[in-house]
Image 1: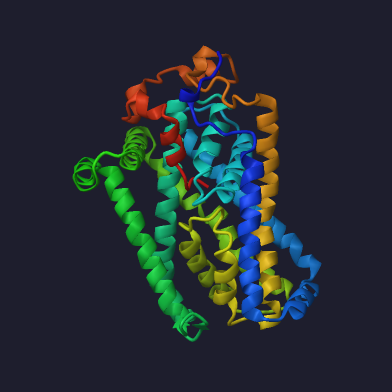
Image 2: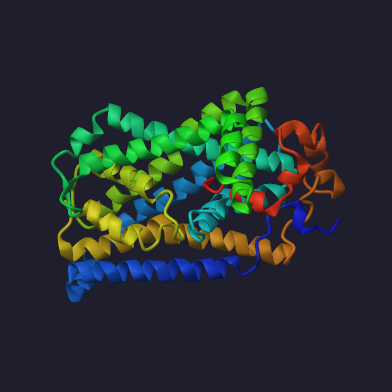
Length: 394
């Protein structure tokens, strides 16, 4: 079967190269702004020598935990859908998803990358879409709970005395505002996803039915459809996957502390972790690829209480390297191999697997009614829908 653009997301072969260039340029702009703020180019460059290479080992381990935990989350989510994909392929898909999310504005490439990995592993499009939106759900739910849990356990009190060079703002207040803001947005999205009928009517009446509105409505319809699928036979999977998010997101939260120790600074573990939870909230919806340009300015502002000015640039660069660049490298290699094998038409067999043989295709095709996701097939098959869907599945 020759795939057509309507059978799934389209990822041009040059997407990695273009994304990497955009990410690099935005990062360079961020570091240029940081150099202007510190006004000590020579001292900042000398700060890189302070990093002890032995701490690269735990930093690399944390980066790997991000992919391994993400793969485990995906494996749990596809089990109720009976998608024939092994854990190793789930880890590859997790790394590819994170990489393309970092390389695209607001992480919008993460959803298509995850769909691509699932489709080429034998999943049908309906099940891949359901798993993709389930990833969005558990990620939003986990981060909301993480912020609330940290606040309930007195995280703000731990950083009460830390002042940020942002209008002399208290880190505790910024943490509370960012956690509440993220939880509010996540709650609205999830409530709309569970009961989209009234919000759909309100959105149409307020904003009409233009292309952007239709894209939002498709996103909500597919998110609601995936929740219906898991509500019928995957409630436990959603709960377990939400808990498993402790691994990938926890690795990102702890990365800043490991890098800080690499520079010989023994800051309080929970203080640093709480600040990096806050950073995740603040950077999550940034419109630049991987929040590049913004992260390079915001991270040193948040960590300035622990670091001398001469180490702000070095700390930020090393943190971003282990947090983002390593993932981009590994996931980009996985995506490049897939693209080279599949050619420009990236989704062989991306319709129903029964149309083209593949590992476990026949089994995946059994009981795959299109109405199962609660989304009409024309919406499921729309490329714009795939781009919008699961944009934060990483």
